[in-house]
Image (cartoon, rainbow, N blue to C red; front, side):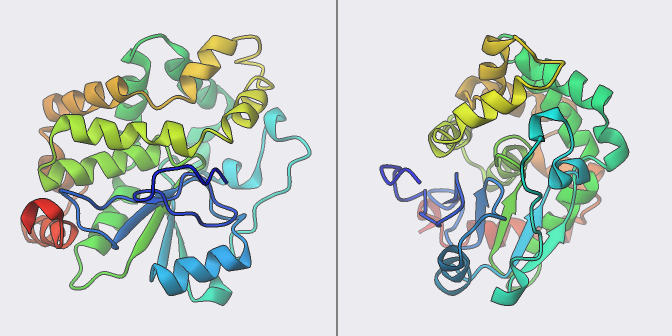
Length: 272
């Protein structure tokens, strides 16, 4: 792992890339962590997550095909072992944004094409799809965070970039963070994934839908701040903002959202 990553927010967990806390000036530290796929964490990494960071729950936003590593781009790659966390006292909750039937080759190809467009339009469309499909998954995580004294948790997808990034953006929006700060936090993923990007690009180019589209694939694996700026604008315009999305779309009560906001902002520097 690249030890030159800024710490905080990045935390070196052996075997996991793009691992960072999302605390700071608007969200309090120590409650929510984000990362790429954590199933290759070493025993030292798992111990650090449990003992040093206090993580008790891992929320996995990936689809079944991703976990099974289906598709030509995953030929010869070992399947993840999702139960590696249990011996360390960490519970894994599988909360896929897209159900297996929504992640077939045609649907995946369409989503990939959204990312390969130039500009932010493709990302906004893809993130709009995530917001619509992820209500149950996001609702589960948000309700966990809305409990009295919620346990620290890790949220991840495959890269910890898109499905994870949209959820984190919603939390920052609820906490009242300025849009530029939300976009800056999202863009940190370019640093966190830097060692993995060549591998991601190589694998994605093996997908028949993306074959030969090098520039498009490079855009797809990027985390440009302008993509999140446009996404926040879309969330405000189309979903009524983070709080309305959580109540009207995810089904949280106003009391749950109030408690959620309190929990995630507790200890934030802006509130001290």
